Image (tube, rainbow, N blue to C red; front, side):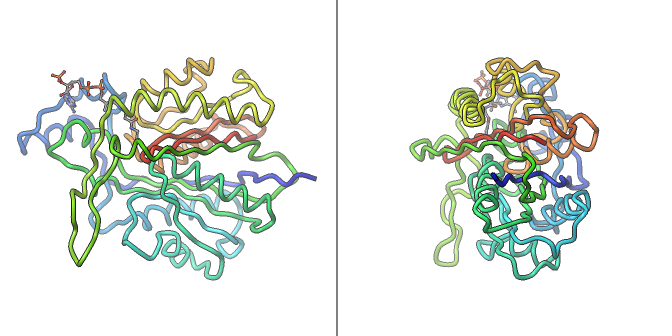
Length: 325
Ligand code: UT7
């Protein structure tokens, strides 16, 4: 009998501070940086994003999302035997955000660790949790994507600072004989390091290099459109399904144009694509679980439906998870 990882519950959290494009443009104008609502909406589909308070770290956002997912799953934190957090913006160099979340939840004892695959982080983390559940190493896993990208943005660079936001999303996975995760597919190609990176690091008690996000937007765009189709097709093939079997496409929320182009290639009508980029901006590893939780809670996603989750990001990394919800 095959063991599946079934999604028991989802949760998400957005920090209180919300900035529309007009709010952000007004703040940037004070520093002599020119942008507009029109440009941001036309090129990206983003209308607003949330920024964490200075007192909040990824672990705070992650814990709030986790509490909501645990409640939706109808379990307690003590029932968890694995915690994985996908993040590129940890509270500290170490320990991991996952161990901080574990402590805040009061779930001491189970393994807890972070995964760093930038915007593909949640897909990587779910793939690892699924493999551990299938192997019998875990039975109830909490998987979280959490980011405070506002901390690593260069607010003098209008080509990147208008794109990102902060937030967290989480799922509780449980070992089940009922279908759950049908297939996973993850990849990386390190030669693309420089088109999306934060080149700074800590050494000798100092921050060396530039600790803010750098991106060659057009290079990322072209790569993203290609690999998002490839990885979706790879997951479908592993599960012996067709693109027409997808009920909901839940892609990484970076740019509405990338999402629409991927949907077209997968013959998925726009109505079947979960879009939150307009309200959240790009929240990196948090974007897919945030979108998933949004569509679960507003009733669009129903039990028994087939979901295609897919992401792409720095590294370069990319991947997908095909789920029977
Ligand atoms: O999560 C990781 C994955 N990341 C992504 O998927 C991002 C992928 N890339 C993109 O989404 C797009 O490439 C961007 C949204 C980043 C940029 O869109 P684009 O259509 O590729 O614009 P562009 O870079 O070609 O810039 C067009 C123009 C330029 O002006 P000139 O040279 O034509 O005069 C830019 O200087 O738009 C200008 N521009 C802006 N204008 C107003 C760039 N940023 C802004 C801005 N406001 N914020």
